Amino acid sequence: MKHLARIGTVLLLAMPAILPGQTPPADMGARITALEAATKSAQSAGDNAWMLVSSALVLMMTAPGLALFYGGLVRRKNVLGTMMHSFILMAVITVIWAVVGYSLAFGGSSPLVGNFQFAMLDGVGTAPNADYAGTIPQSTFMVYQLMFAIITPALISGAFAERMKFSAMLVFTVLWALLVYFPMAHMVWGKGGLLNAFSGGKIPCFDFAGGTVVHITSGVSALVCALYLGKRLGYPTTPMKPHNLVISTIGAGLLWVGWFGFNAGSALAASGLASSAFVATHFGAAAATLVWMFVEWIDAGKPSVLGAISGCVAGLVAITPASGFVKPFPAMVIGASAGVVCYFMVTRVKRKFGYDDALDAFGVHGAGGTLGAILTGVFATSFINDGLKDAAGKVQPLGMVDGNGGQVVNQLIGCAIAWGLAIVGSLIILKIVDATIGLRITKEQEMEGLDTSMHNEEGYIFEA
Image (cartoon, rainbow, N blue to C red):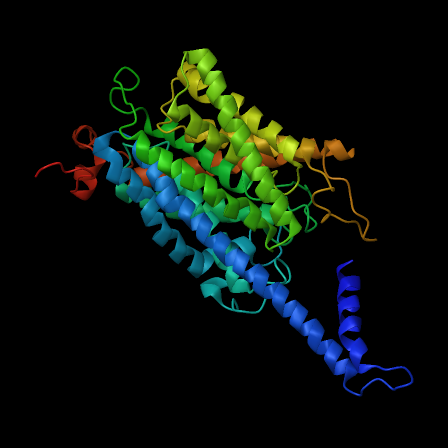
């Protein structure tokens, strides 16, 4: 249809120059070529503008979004140290990405990890990379994917909040990005990746914007960190309430807005698919917020602000893998399901097993990401995303609602791979860091707080 519209436009523009009985002007072919070039240029400009805005939105999710969200949830003596985890990773991951990260994630075509094709960003310029996004500069695609690599390890910090050394956090993050994130990103989104349904992956999984790549890997790694480091001093007998839910609520609002770039931007174009992902994201988050609030209201007697903002994030997490594949109402079902499951993960399961996932990174991201990935296999439909086609160009059914029940199995396998990589990779890295520079701050430093013991600063100074 797009091609027919273009041809019609060309003919309408050309008609005044062709009168009955006359020979078409000699430059008619050149005019048509120029019009086609102008059309492509306009599409490229629009797509590029949207992707640059999306890149900025996703970066905003890390700082100030996640920094404020996590910062308000810890005790006052740890607010700066916690926010620093998010902020400094914008610099650390950017450098690693430029040197080798982008290439390991999107270079080559092997099933497990990329190569050094784009090391030092060699060959990454204004020309599009048709393997990934044919209408925007590869440099735009590169920087957009960078923002995902930044926020993912920052999510893990919610589990070891208030008790990991800053130096250990830096080394852990560098190694985790190299051993866990970059291989997982290639398997799911890279050319020839094992789980890439749209590039011949042997186990075709659907993950539109990072359910497995971002949320399962970070959430499961967070649980491993929490278990390895052990509990905070005094947990769970000593009250450890959030010190500033005001800034956490602001952070949650920024995350909700930024998530539109996260999910709708993953369409890699200013297209109808981007609109669909935008709508699914918003509806899923809204449903999860309300369901968490009402479940808590029934269970605890009162609806809390902390519960509402936690439900919001849970819904955003769960809809992430499905956002470019599902209709609005199934998006609400996914969000509502996350509101229930994640609520009980952070209020019942954590209490029963006694692990100290300080800011519920596993309960929200690990559990919510897994739930969303599985339900993607149920509700994904070619009505929303017709990108999966056979050799003859015929659109293929996607999820169970399309009659492809086997996709749920593929999603389960994809989740298992993400879980396995996160557990094994994180455990190995933790042992290495612990054996070399040590992971945990001393008892005295923990009592003093991260702000002064690690950074010699205070988040709040009330002196006149």
